Length: 271
Ligand code: PGA
Image (tube, rainbow, N blue to C red):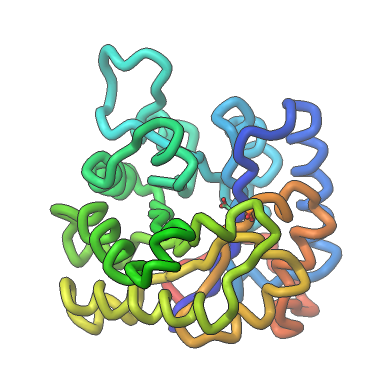
């Protein structure tokens, strides 16, 4: 069984005081709402600057801390970069890799993403590998091929054992920050296709275990419908994750996620 995984992507937002007060509020809300950590994985992917502070607040609260990028080398002359080794050192649990904004504005290639996925797993960091097509590519009917190519190149040299630990986030570029969500049919079609591409490369057993998220204008009003789709196991939430009150509504998209006896223990992903 695949455990749902809801991750917030703050992008380049907030300052330290806002980040810590958000974390305090979210921690309270998760407790107050009785979120059952056996039923959902939660993460906040924040700017590097806040990661240590978030780790302290979220410690043993069942909320993972994620970065938004990493460097695949352990150390060296890479000014301005942060390595998987460094993130591991402060116990960061996950990391977004190959987000479309990084591919677009920082020229990040799928080849680099593949190295980043491997580096993350080597340091026990759960990679959230992003793939998605532009509006032009969708309208020309090439979206499946485009995503397949991006996915396979971003998984170059990634083994089956590593694949099982990798989360794939399908984020159509035309739905990011636009308020325009893919229809549930479009999101499910691509998620199922991504799973079939993984099955072709790694076998069905591996593909059945991979968590596939949808991302692109996810909010409390559309999360339930998206999560009901067979191949969608979670969401990568940008804008709507910036407000803890909205984010908690997304986390508890299903009444089953709430339990009476709140467990304040770290989450178990192997369920
Ligand atoms: P959005 O961003 O939810 O604001 O559309 C999603 C993302 O870029 O991860």
